[in-house]
Amino acid sequence: MKSTTILVVDDERRYRELLEMNLTRRGYRVVQAADGLTALNQVELEAPDLVMLDLMLPDMDGYEVCRRIREYSGVPVIMLTAKAEPAEKVRGLAVGADDYVTKPFSAEEVLARVEAVLRRSEAGRLDPGGADFGALHIDYGQHQVTVSGREIDLTAGEYRLLETLARNAGRVVVQDELLRRVWGEGFAGETALLQTAIRRLRSKIEDDPAVPRYVLTKRGVGYSFART
Image 1 (cartoon, rainbow, N blue to C red):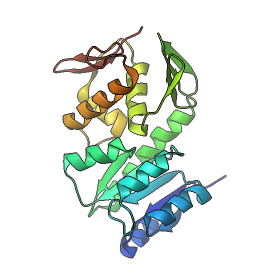
Image 2: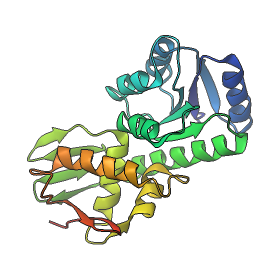
Image 3: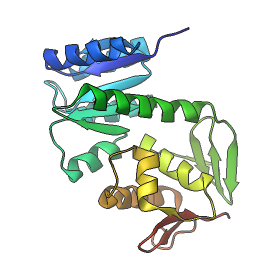
C-alpha cells in the first residue's frame, strides 16, 4: 500500500525536521524543500498527497508557490505562517490554500489539521457523480465546474464552498457550519473570509453577481444554493 506523502517546505531546517519527525511517527512519508523552486520541482517529481508550505521563503513567497501549484495540481496545501491576521488568511485561501497553521505550533495541532485536510481530500475523491443546476454543472469526481459548457476556474477553497452549498441545495447552511466544512475547525467567526469567498465564487459562476441566481444569502444566518 502506498504511503501518504507529505511535502514540507520551509527555509528553516529546525521546522522541517520537527515536522518530519512528528509526521513520520504518525506513518507519513515526508520529503523536504527549503525554497519555492525546489518545492515546485518536488510537487512534480513526488506527486505528494499534501503540501505544508511556509509563507516566507528565500526565492518566492508561499502565496506565489501556491498559485503556481494550483496552475496544474489540486494537491491540498496547508500554509505555515507567523502571520495570523485575517487579511493574510484571506489572501492565502484566495490563491488556493486549504488551511493555515500559525507558528509556533504544537505537534497535536499540526497532526489534527493534516488529518482533517487529508480526510476532506479523500472524501472528494471517493464521492464521484455530478449535479446539474440549470446551466451550471458540477462533476464531483473530477472537481470540475462548467456554466453553459464553459469550464470555470475555481480555487480549491472556492470549489469546496460550491460543493458544500450544492450538496445542501434548498437549505440554508449557517456561516460557521460553512467555515468548518470548507476550511476546517478553528475558522468559526471568520465571516470576512467567508464573505470574500462568496463574492469571488459569485463573480465566476453568476451571470450577474449583484443579483445571484445560484448562491443566495439568508441575511444574518448563512447561505443557500438554489435547486434550479
